Amino acid sequence: MTNATAQLSPSRSPMEMAIDRVWRYFCSVRAAIAEIAFLALLVLIGTLRGSSVPESLANGVPFLRPLVDRWYAWDVFRSPVFAAVLALLAIAIAVCTVNRVPGIWQTINHPRIRTSHGYLNGADTSATFNTNSTTDELAGSYEATLREKRFRVLTERIGTDTHVYADKNRYARMGTFPFHLALILLLVGGIVGAQYGFREREFILPVGDTRAVGHGTDLSIELVRFQDSYTPLGTAEEFESEIIIYDGGEQVRRETISPNDPVSYRTATVYQTSLGHGSNMRVTDDTGVELYNGTVDVGLFNFAGNPDSPAGYVEIPAAGVTMTVVAPDIEPFNAPELDTLQLKNGQMYVMLQPLAGSDAGPQEFVIDQGQSIPAGGLTVSFDREVQWSLLQVAYNPGIPIFAIASFLLIGGLAVTFYFPLRRIRAVIAPGPQGATLTAVPLAKRDWSGKREFFQTVAALESGLGVTPRVKKPAGSEDWEHVPATPSAPSSTG
Image 1: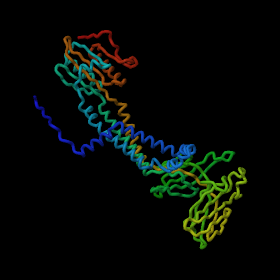
Image 2: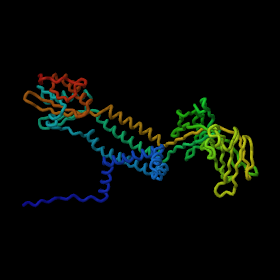
Image 3: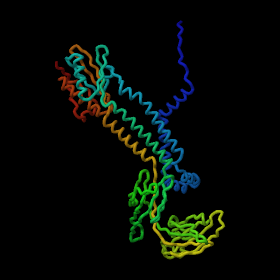
Image 4: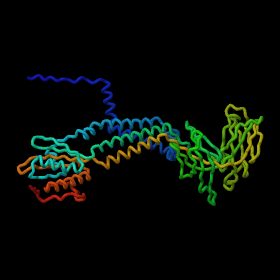
């Protein structure tokens, strides 16, 4: 009985095993599908958050109200969960791309040359030339034809057979790297935009005022002019705002925007959303010191005492009060019994309510334009009515990353699809009457690759003066420049 000994390879360290498992996880197709499915679910949740669907669910199933409230309160696209999933996908794409580098580089620089007769005979597409030439003469003619077609030709002698490998556009396979880098940059841009971008949905700007955008930017916007037109029914038909954008106090853009025509400056975009009116109010104390001088934007909500009376408010910490301003009823003939204030044009109803911790007393009064009214140690003045423009300001610092990613994405796709890899394998074998060449394209589902193969076969047929025996797959009659298959092979000397 023979004793067999086996040499055991040294066991791997726990660190190597952990790295291997992590690497295999990021290369796993199942894990990628799960991550993409979870990301799609988050996108759906975040998109529906801005619609009436959650509210409809709460109305139909009342016990879902707490869940719906949390749904509205959760900003999915700015959450750590969303950023973590994007980062996980970016890492997975990077790992999978790196994992493919050795194989692609092997195909480009060190392809396998030798093949087998069984593979050639079993291919659905092939061309066989029976000639009276020697192996070297046929190999030289075949190589010259391939090089005219811009193929790289590699040969290897196996016994009496000459194996030939030819390819074209081999470096185009590297187009996959900028493409996958673009996918990574798109995910990184999404993370940057979600974490450091913002959208100010209620950026109210009265005519003549300049307001800072904030959020850590040096941008500010001035409303120079607002123009609107109305239908005979009194609804706004068209409106536009002429604005000036300042960056660090310097004017950088002056444009006129409308609801369908925003303006952009670098990574910021300003949209025209709506319009309204406001009241220029001043508040001073009993010594004449000015505590507030600005515009109270009226129309952000309606007064509870009259659903058709637009209202607005502003907190004045220096005075210790919240000042609410209510405008006249905009639809006096709709339920007139609800109009308890009976305000006329040019009048405003003002309420002063104490802030938390303030000893100021509540005050309520009607004030006319241009009038000043003392109220509990304060003097409130209504200077004039003004128009204001409701804008949206979107700021996304990920836009430059998206631009780079778009360039790489289109470039990678263009290289891959406009310069496809073409490969042909062949064996030149000696025979009793002369050498025989059998060539097969590596293009199982690549119809354009097979068409180019048959164009190469036609060129070789013209050069050799030999009609090949051609095997073509079903449907090849639709291709261009396919040489006809002869009823029987022929050869010439």
